[in-house]
Each structure stands twice: as C-alpha cells, then as structure tokens.
Length: 378
Image 1 (cartoon, rainbow, N blue to C red):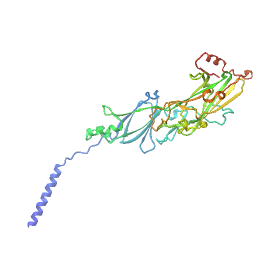
Image 2 (cartoon, helix red, strand yellow):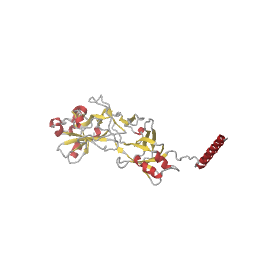
Image 3 (cartoon, helix red, strand yellow):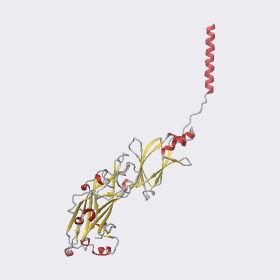
Image 4 (cartoon, helix red, strand yellow):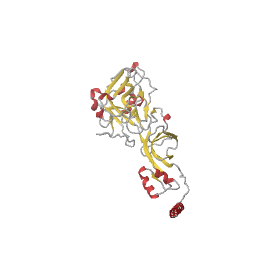
C-alpha cells in the first residue's frame, strides 16, 4: 500500500508540471514575411564618364554561379527596380541593344566572364590589287558599358518586411553590400557607365601631296573586340581600313613638314600587346596606297609595331580586370622624318595629269598652305 501511494503522488506531480509548462508558453500565431524578396534599385550614371545618355540600354543580370542571364531591353536608361532573393548577382549594362549595332556582334552571351563584342567585316569597299586578299573590320560604333557584382543580404530583406527582430543589428550589417538605403527604405546602387573605344590617330609626313589623286591606307594587328566584364581587348587581330575620303592635311608643332592625318575608332591593341616592348616591329603593318594624277600607283609599307603608343601608358600596364578604370587611352602613330628617316617618308613625284581624269588635290593644297587644316577631297 505504501508503494502504490508514492507512485500516485509522482504521477500527480508530473501531470501538474506539464499543465504549468503548457500554460507558461507564449503561443504566438504564425506570421508571413512580406515582401518575400528584397526590392533594390540600380541607378545608371551615363554622363560622368561616358558623357552621353543613349535612348535605350540592355541590362543583363546573372545569379552567381548560374548561366542564362535575365536580359532586359529598356528605354528607361536612368534606373531599374529589381525584386531579388538574397544572394550574389552580376550585372552588365550597355548602351542600346545588340541588334542596334551594325558594326559588331556579341559572343558568349550566356557567360558573364567571357561575353564579348566583336567587329564585323567591311562590306562596302572594293579592294584593289594591293589589298585583294584582306578582310577589313568595320569601324566600331561607340558603346558604353558597366560591369558590376553586388550582394543582396538576408538582413536587407528583413529590413523591408513588416516584422523584423534586432533592428539596430540589422542596420549595421547591411553596410558592406555597397547599397545606399534611402529615407523611404529603398536600397540603391549607383553604376557609372564607362567608354570602351579608343581612337587610332595616324600622322604621315609626305612630300608632293599635290600630285596625288586618290589615297587609301590600312593597318593590321588591331584587336577584333573587347570583353564586357573587364578592360582587356581580345587577342584576335584584324586589319582596319583608312579610306580615301577621311584624310586631312595638317601640321605638327614638333615638325616643319606636311602631314597627312587620319583618325579612326578602334577597340585597341590585342591583349598582351599593350606595351611597346611586348610587340615586334611587324606586329602592326601600315600601308599607304596612292594613285597619282596620271593614274600611276604607289604603295608604301611600314612595320610600325614599335611606333604605335597608348597615350598615358608609361612604364607599366595600367589595364586591369576591373571595368571601372581609365579607358580613354588613344593610340598615336607618327611616321615622320624623325621616326622613320627622310628617305622613307612617302615622296610623290610630279606627273603629267593629261591621261587621267581626276584633278588631284591642287586647290585644296593651295588653301591649306595659308595655314590650318583641310580635308582632302577626291
């Protein structure tokens, strides 16, 4: 009887403890977080570096580690609002859409690391005997690009929901994402668009330019494109055409001679050949083909791999895999008495124009001799 009494007492005490425990629980109803995704805004700055605001743009967004980006073509070029799950994302934005560029096409568009723009072939040009086997690349059209990686944190999501714990801790934790949180709770990320193209500026000192009727040039060894997510150009090489109707006559402060001048947009030099010491003389070959007033042709060929130089690129390579760097590095090529010697500059002899219909440069040259710069009209 005594044993039974002890067991009953223990049972009653256990039941009482369970009742008290259940009564002490704070049974709060389940809550649904809203929104379920973080709302962020990408702000695009075209003017600071690119200097031009286009009428439309392309935005490509990858979730880290994945292919098949989300691609948006939009006329709202100033900002884009996104609703994203927490995670790391990569974004590329560039002016206009790929289809609007007649001079280039886009390759490897599924891969953030290797997506590139490549130059198309020139189609409106009739080659001559001196360049019949050459496939020229079209002058690239201007394009502005930004490439960036950003992170959406769990804390950013919690900050925007109706209920969130540890408010002061959350606010502290979002700082490293590089987003700005505005007064209304919006997270914004500023993205500065950068120019991509360079210009190749060519000066050629000449004698007897008044005897020339037609003039065409070319230069080999230029990059065929660029990678959108870093500053390096492609390694593949193409030849650029310097057409007849784009030459001017000019002078240089460092010389007393007469110079032909031509400027052309280019992607730049191939990756690995940015520095002069990384090139051989025949890495780039410049050709100047002239038709004289009597129909006679002359061709000058120069190995200029050691003569082309990036402006501002001194001593060491300033390019990097970060797109957000100084890209406005023009290329200069100067063929003058000082660089190639007096005997090697183009000399165009006096000729009798009676058997050829074109009148040459006569009037333009006379006007130019009064000073300034003049276009050469053919």
